[in-house]
Length: 101
Image (cartoon, rainbow, N blue to C red; front, side, top):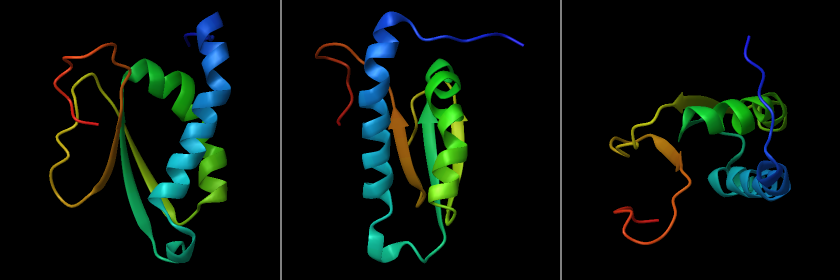
């Protein structure tokens, strides 16, 4: 098993990313709609999924048991096609990335 640890910059970003992911959860599932079963597909780079998302999934699922999470850890950008609720998480620097956010 491979060990993973945060870089100093990653440690600085961790509290902010945690807060952003919590806000994302709130945005995806408004309070008045939490009784319905939902499925959320999260597409992320493998390293981010392993370091930041996987450790938080158990806590997220205990807080939001009605949301089924499918984590797609891949380098390819998501297509956002179909009727799934999807989120794509990427770190990009500078203009000209070709993505609309």
